[in-house]
Length: 243
Length: 240
Image 1: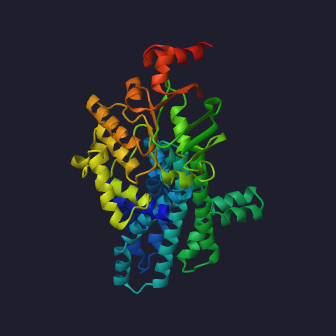
Image 2: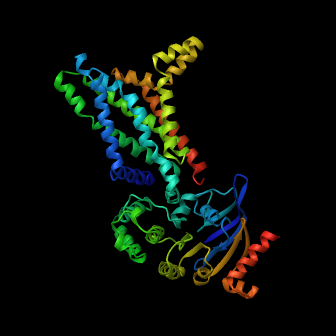
């Protein structure tokens, strides 16, 4: 536990001691707002955050790998991994500590979009439950994507390669749930396989959270994703730390 | 305090460490001497529980390096080659991070930090970020990190590499001061360092131990300077 807390604390402080985090936050918040208003928020004349959350997956596919790519690639490249792993901290504690710090950072980024719900509340009377579950879904999705990013960050010492691999993997998982993809696949594959693919995609589980439902299947999907990919990250790290 | 039996480690087809065995007791400073690529760093990484050995066993203060790595890391102070650290942290926050990791809390923390800062002479850079420090200072910060929990065992990988003569002298002084009540392994290329600091020497080449003795004995046996002894032993090995 101590190892986890130490790494978590260091990472989180580290985020805010360089300009990179602030640049990231500004870009994230800008696009979160811009995409919402560009997609006819005012024209729709509805006081809800549907359009905001609709754009979340796409936004996250680019922004989460940005946060994730430096998690382990940097450590391996600069050699500080040798320092970290010769302290009395297990690999598991280190991996989860870094993941938790990055996830907290993304959570802070989401919290900083608070002007959006305030705007919506001012303009009308939105369904608060939907907004809360929308944020929860976004936070969980961010965690899932981050876990994938964690894994690919441990695979390469080069941050750019980690970034690209993560974007490709997350885009695939996201695209797997889009109606156009599923329709196409339905022509080629049996229905059971297609519905299997659908239940593995981000889009499906995110959408149901958006609609105000907290379904155990969705939460467990994200948690399994996170546990699986972060554990894989730990395994890869053990194999490759000295290489 | 350190005991190693038939440690072996390969990286793919390359055998980095090929069945080495030795022991180090308290009060001894063991010098690992060898050409580049001999397996010195790999052996030290295995002892510091950074890399697991492919076969063989080792123990530090009675804790097994394969089965009880966290206990070993707790007993050990390790300075890796090139003294890695988190560049964006200041020296002060870095040492605090190490204290967190080594469970030095509350009332014990300040005196511990003050002690190593004084010993490694890094007061002047305490508030600077590590990436802005010169190599010598970075090395000293690395040394401070290895000493902060007052470990019984120290493993230092090329501690004076790249330092200027004055800094080399200071580090060697430090090692001499600590030698009496600690057990140390130091790897080096610098033969005068071996004579200045080490009470025992192991010469390694191509993953195997070629000599395990004291600097004085080696010089006596071969009747020449340590430089020549080194050359004779390591080149005989590659020729034969």
